[in-house]
Image (cartoon, rainbow, N blue to C red; front, top):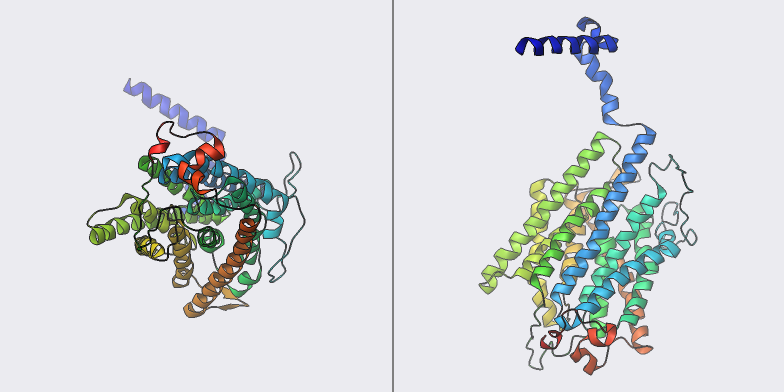
Length: 464
């Protein structure tokens, strides 16, 4: 048997050499160093058509991972609201995702990417974003335009999901959907145009890799205005300053939602590399995955330790939000930091949640799921932390760390002023016209019975 295997191996090698003359050449004619040197360019980058395919796949894979985050938000919110409002929350999440897609196609994308030449605060490239023809491909772009639109659209929907969780349990469906229509069709795209659309913030050197400010803080500011203008849930705050706790209906569901969001974040941050046609790009995507994961881990562990020290009990909801705060914090720059720095950035995000959730209650700002600390406060921290790891080049000059920090702060303030003003006007207009809140009786009964007619947990809603 052994001799037969040797003979078979010899025949196979001979046939391989015969079929490929390059293998039969003397070693002296093709030194190893020369072979490696010749292969290096091919290994570093692929051809135009192949790069187009890989880049498009990155957008599509990242896009459907971020789309899966919609399920994460829905489950997180469904788990943290009371049983009598669960169906309404699920309806809001599937509705806002769909509205975001329609509005981003009709007008949002062309506001976000208006074709600024140098700088600008508002522009529009038209309406109804055109896709490529069947079988067509513009290799000059480096990726399918449809894949780019899809990837950008799911980011838009994420912004609206942030608002949904904060104002849960005391907002009627119709005014909420009207707000989402304006947020996704106008407010969010304008903010995006300032940086990713090559607008004024980009010209200053502002940097936000995957959207700590453009996505998360935008949603956070809009949610903050909603929470203030709409007011707290009935009975949430007593006249003596007491905070009444309304426990979530399903902590396992909220935990599942958090893990889904954590998974989706690899698409959120990783695909924001925007290219996968070179060895360097793929390596960078890999590093982004690691930094993203470790920042979330840092946020969780910090939240567990701090709640144990502060309350003598580890709070599972704080741990869940610690993970999300860590993810939001690293989103502004998930590539440049070391793993250690990423853990620290995420850990600070986790600490922000632990200390700002009770701070909101002191001001009687009712945030049902803790979205404002997670997406707004941690988003601001992550945006400012960019200066410690990245300095932009403006007009051929690299900014100092202090200058970069200043530019990042300008971006935070500009976004806050615009989103707060636009959101406040819209919330007040809705409140003054069609009304935003249900009646006290409906809110007490639960929105599911009156808004959807479908109870998530039949027979249990009246107990929560």
